Image 1 (cartoon, rainbow, N blue to C red):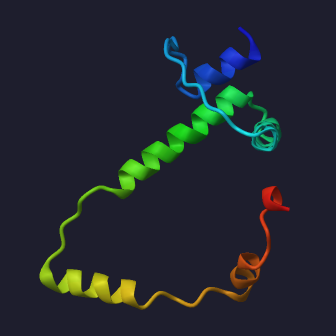
Image 2: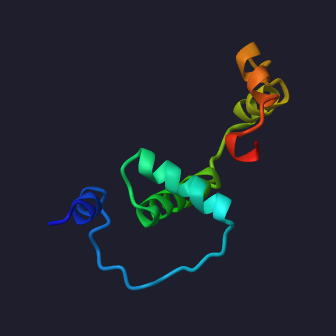
Amino acid sequence: MTASSARAARSGMAQKRDTTINIRLTARMRDLIDSAASSVGKTRSEFILESASRQAIDMLLDQRLFSLGEAEYAAFVSALDRPPEPPAKLRALFHQKAPWEQ
């Protein structure tokens, strides 16, 4: 078993892959993805597939319906209308350029 197939088996993706997705991107974006994939010991394909799958799951979970009673709904809306102030470190981070924008 190769290291790649071992990683696939551990991550639950040992199923036969029979569909392809083609995307166009800049060399800079490819290099960014390659760098991130390398930093976690994955191939570009593994990294993209896992990242896209995780994002898809998160997106679908964020859209789930939940029901609240009238009092709970009022408290929920009130909390949304009063977001906490971001900490100083987070405010400073907002003013920095991302590494791929530099």
